[in-house]
Length: 118
Image (cartoon, rainbow, N blue to C red; front, side, top):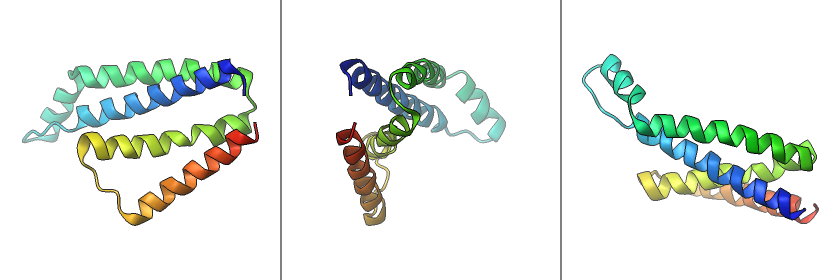
């Protein structure tokens, strides 16, 4: 993989993970009614940060697709799932049971194999 492809891949990972974390943070508000909860979420900076991250990720993804085949980009892009799950554990104390850890391990191995073949 070229240096540009690696940089775009890392940017994609960081933007995707940041977007998911921002959305989760925005969604954690608790109110008496659904309407108030959704209204509060709409005014939370975290929601807008998450949307900005996903817009930037879209641009980075298009750039990545311009330098890599779609099949490879999709395979190595799967590492986002692992990083979002680890970040959820770290920031929100979400549970990682043995099956999820096994799944993350298999995804990471698949990404490593796909990346090594590039």
